[in-house]
Structure formats: structure tokens, C-alpha cells
Image (cartoon, rainbow, N blue to C red; front, top):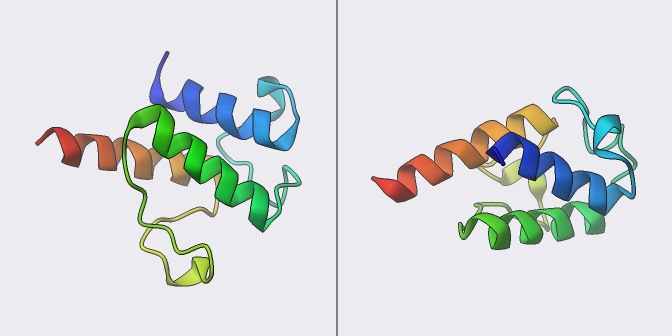
Amino acid sequence: MTVRDKVIEIIAEQAMLETSDVTMESTPEDLGIDSLGLVESIFAIEEAFDISIPFNANDPSESDFDISSVGRIVAGIEKLIAEQKS
């Protein structure tokens, strides 16, 4: 399973949607994910990939991690995984 597929699976589960309903262009708002759901998604992603995501749940706009779309989340996670391996 690719990073993209796993992230989509986690986000779909949090949003109680089918994976086919989640696109790379989807925003958390599009998917009906509130701030608590977003935090739960981030924790699930961290656990699935054994990484630490620099995300400030109290002030997401101040985070270095872009959560504006599923595609941005996937790209950020791929970058963190690559950094962790190097």
C-alpha cells in the first residue's frame, strides 16, 4: 500500500466515508472533518507511519505542516518519511 493509499484510507475512516469519496484535491472541510477529527487523523497517520508530524492542533495556521488538502498532507508525509530515512 502506498503512502497515498494509506493516508486516504485513514482520512476516509475518520470522515466515515468510502475511500473513493476522498480525492487528492479534497480539503478536510470538504470531507466534513472538524478540528477534532483532523487531530485524530494526524495521530492515526503518525502511528501508521511511525513519524512525528509538526502540527499545532491549537493553531493549525502556525504549523509547518500543510493540511489544506489531502494531496498536501500526502506530500508532507512523504517528505517526513524521506527525512526520517536519511
